[in-house]
Amino acid sequence: MLIAQGEGQYIEFKERLDKSFAKEVCALANASGGRVFLGVDDFGQIKGIQLTNDLKSKIQDLAHNIQPSVIVQIEAVENIIIVQVEEGDNKPYQCSDGFYMRMGANSQKMHRDEILKLSIKSGKVRFDEQICTDFDWEDFDERRFNYYLTIAGISNSLNDKVTLSNLGLLTSAGMTNAGVLLFAKNPGKYIISSKLRCVHFKDDSRVNILDKKVIDDGIIANIEYAFEYLNKRVATEFIIKGLKRTELPDFPEEAYRELIVNAMVHNDYFLGDNIVVELFDSTLVVDNKGELLFDPKELGRKSEARNRLIADMLSRTYLMEKAGTGIGRIKQQCADNNNTLEFKTSDHFTAQIFVRDKSKDEIDTEKTDAETTSEKGSEKGSEKSSEKILELILSRPTITIWELSKRLKISTRAIEKNLANLQSNNEILRAGGARGGYWQIISKGESGANDNQIETAQKSSQKSSQKSSQKSSQKIIDAIAMNRDITIFELSKICNISTRAVQKNINKLKEEGKLMRLGPDKGGYWKVLVK
Image (tube, rainbow, N blue to C red; front, side, top):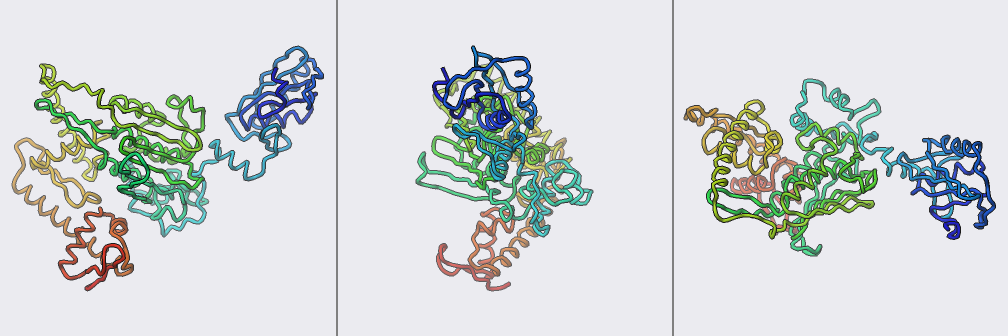
């Protein structure tokens, strides 16, 4: 019998019912549950006790008076009463004497920090809803905020603070941590866990690193960067069958996009660890700190966001589908692409996608009638996609490839292909850079593009691009004048352009005699010749 095992983590002996009974129930509910044996002394000797209606009522009252209430199961076995206490799903629990936690064979009173830690762990205290008391409004990035309003389809006609307040990001006490993580110029200045680390390894060991980036540009930009980082590095196999090309990526892009967003929403920012995206030769890993707020067996059937405010903000954009459906979509995407998927849950949540199993690919070399029909259908589908893209660009010229992908429910690669076709057909042009630029419709396609329209749009695009380049060059000069050791990556962040664009501007400045490099790439420095 269990009594012979003695008291322990899950077993408590009590000779009779007294006020300390509530303490034991509270401690078990705050831990992993257990049983209280009434009628047994501390030495495991059976003294006996009879279960009467009055005694049963007292047991239930003591459990009910715990805050919040604990429901117990009462069972009489011969002359012993066994009270079953399940692990609570509404921690922390408090009895009249305070908060208690079961630790081995004892029920220990919890101190303030322990209570706070349990509250955080159970999701009762949410990091994103706390106020960042030292936030300085000088660090509010209006550019990031306006970009969010654009992708969320929210009007910017109101004052920024009013809009932030309406979104729940700003209160009378100040800016929430969610607001800082989304819209601070330098979130890491206030929140150490704001960064995202992307690492590309040469093989399956953690020894040889091909590339490593640490990003701290706010949640939206961090997600977009991580997605593009993987898109550039995940290998894709192209298989041609007749006129049809099939793309088979090593890892499905929709799956790892969902995993990156999921990590942002469920990360435990209290703990100070960064979200990590790692690409190995045969696996892709996305890891964030924080336990699940529910039984791991319910993963995929149940969802509870650790950061509800962040989840709400992302759900308004193209980045996040309906809350609670992400795990199911990730599993389906991996299954469709012949990838094995594993989740590991502890104090971390780790998702690991294994490289596509090529032996399961079913691709015939001969073209059948059904495939011919499929190709025709694909061509018609592409035409319809192009028409929808034109309509969306017409309604909002600043729309992004990701947004188009979400609206049309096709991959970003398919969007890029359609955009390339529209540009080659002189139906659209890109004015300005990849960031901060916009699309221009030259012709809606009834009789082809008008030469004057194209020439006008091209001149407009060139002027816009030239102005943008001039501004970037000046920013580079100013930044180098302040810090001669600044890196190209740091310049790309300051100018909000790619590292390639920075390099292009630097080369031009060198040719113009405005800038020179003294010493080697590592250990050298920049010198401004003409400001």
